[in-house]
Image 1 (cartoon, rainbow, N blue to C red):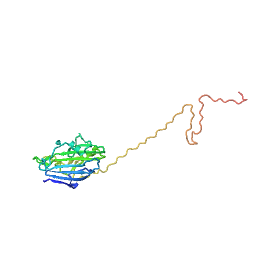
Image 2: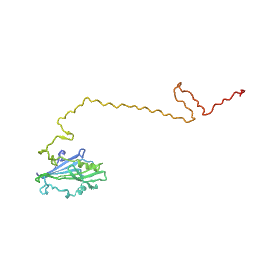
Image 3: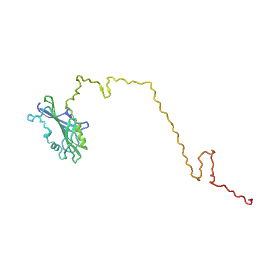
Image 4: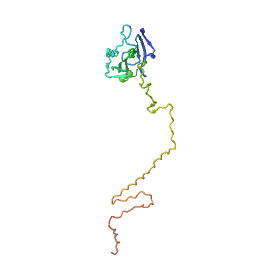
Length: 273
């Protein structure tokens, strides 16, 4: 396949899709090489940091060439100064390479973070998806190389890193997963039994149980109210009448009896002794 000059294509033809909610695609520039396709996907941003916000992806169709016949070289990351790439993408932002191991749906990747004084947060991330080979050793799918460079206002490291987890390639990456070895094998019966037991094609109706005597409610046992406690007055204290209705028994003022001795009434004057 001859090399084609870079051309602007429809964003719908981008081979890599940003996550829902952005960053949005502003422009897609595609270049075709004899052994690969390279796309530079410009991203919409409101960052204050000077630089290009984009995703670059290279899809190798077979093994990389040596560059002599316009074929792109597939260079492993071990031979690339990725720190220098990050500093070149976002100069004067204090880029620092992450020491942490991370991976997304396509495998491990690396990244660097910068936080310039203007309030932006910047990321430069890279990922290489190794090729898959046929049993004969021929290439079934070539290497896929992804680079993300993006700055954003009012964004955290985690928000920018989340973009790498949600990127999706619009191409076949991995071969279909193989089924269990017992599927289709002889002397290996498979019964339609799931987590809930035997799986019916037409579920049977549940049996209806009739003539069941409803359970009687437990009898309500009333608890008698406790009798009022009447405190006895101390010795010699006046007796206060109870607040009963007028005319009832026991009404009136009660005079306490003397505690001891009899009452002595004096005789009238001039009387006999």
